[in-house]
Image (tube, rainbow, N blue to C red; front, side, top):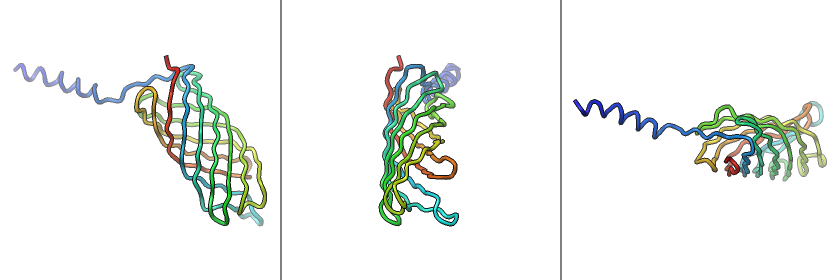
Length: 178
């Protein structure tokens, strides 16, 4: 009889131990992320066509600062090298907001930012410098209170001119949460 009473308590203890922990983000928390991924860009071409490379590698660096539990402001820079139709390069910087939907072990988020992109090399007809509005999102997996890794996708464009798309992985370090 005594064994039957211990079994529910043991099962409940095990479920609590393996459940994802809550990691409450908040005002004043800072995060620095480095990312590596795949990217592609395209520009309007002659006669309603677009020009761009086949793709390339993109490196990025992002800083975030918490405004509230779910909202942070964010600034980032990124750059990439692209192949296809020649060798080209792109660099961009943006600043905006990140909203996190839940603050558990798996944290989905969306971002909205504004900035600029510069593209040069072949197949671009000349060096392009254009403003962009960036929309993106991702999913972070918390490894602990101060570290996480995840995936992120971003699209930057404005009025159909230069468009840049990136998809990659990122690692994040956090501090200032106490």
